[in-house]
Image (cartoon, rainbow, N blue to C red; front, side, top):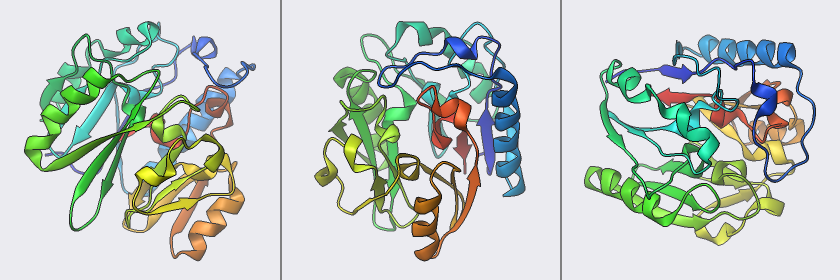
Length: 258
């Protein structure tokens, strides 16, 4: 089982053609996006993660959002079936890539659809629950297939509604202690989560854990960063403004294998 690997995919030349569903389309600075992606990878590397690049998919504008094609739990890699037809080609070659990392490989098959951005893993000492956003990109059959892969491994899978944002993790993520954090205007059902904390900024709803108490979050949420520092976390901000224009956040730019 690989440890401390961050799987990423370099932004391609068609990034500006990426899909947006809940925000206005705006111009993308490709050079700035490339430098921000490099800085994001550098932050993960400085936190002790080995950066492993998935082969590029330059014809796929959204391929940089690598989280959407791959869900990993322990030694199992699940290659997804994205809900947007334009994004399905991003999965080509992913199974061979993760098999090369030594992972067992499973797939989400038609008619099921699943985007990895809809999959939120919340682990506590007592249990692991995977919340899955049921909405525009992920359907019930995709969730059923995901549960078929994860339930035998002791993981509870629970569907939650997603209507106000692109993906579940566009609205909520989880802290290391199991608290789910979110930005209330885009959270469809905050009562779905046993422990929930509202954040003061949209970007404050998105964190990735790179160490036991070390979080990375967007530089666009400085007030939220202070909220988390006051709770005892080390917070490293990273500027991902060009990816935020495409409904991206810190979670979707990497898949972390612990």
